[in-house]
Length: 223
Image 1 (cartoon, rainbow, N blue to C red):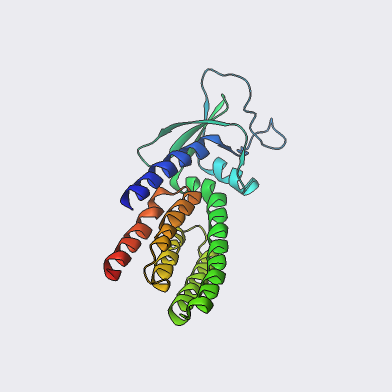
Image 2 (tube, rainbow, N blue to C red):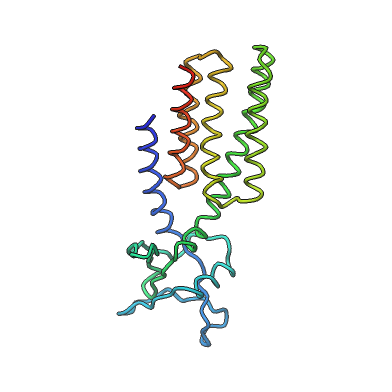
């Protein structure tokens, strides 16, 4: 389990920087020369212009969903936690920690949607298994609770790290519920790998560890 989580961590870390290095957005500047205030990233210059702060915020306000376009590479991570990335050959964009989160908002929304769908499908599967096995209260109650709590998290704090961590815990909760429901059937343990793999969609390596700690604790208790 720990090796699976560690593998997921490295995959997601590498994928995060790969995504950021390919993401681009319209960087808006108060320039008289440009009617729509959009940077022209073409051409070559000897010294790239640094774009940061409010100019980047204006970009996000203008284009909240980030699209792949001109972002060429990640230059460096700075001591204050900001990230410098190259936009074509003319500009270097400095993203603060909060702006980096903004870049990932579309990814987090997609991850939340996929986890919500998975939990709903699992609720249907749990009900079918309950009918076949005659175990109702704990599996159905747990599945309904996970669906309701995660739904409200997605509505209230969709971009917060707590939501991503809860997504991982609930995905492993699915594993724990079915292990109990099927009386420790070995095949139900494979839900662990399904849950850990699904978390890759968030591109956040840290959200894997609370869920792995949860499932390890569950195995210790069940044994």
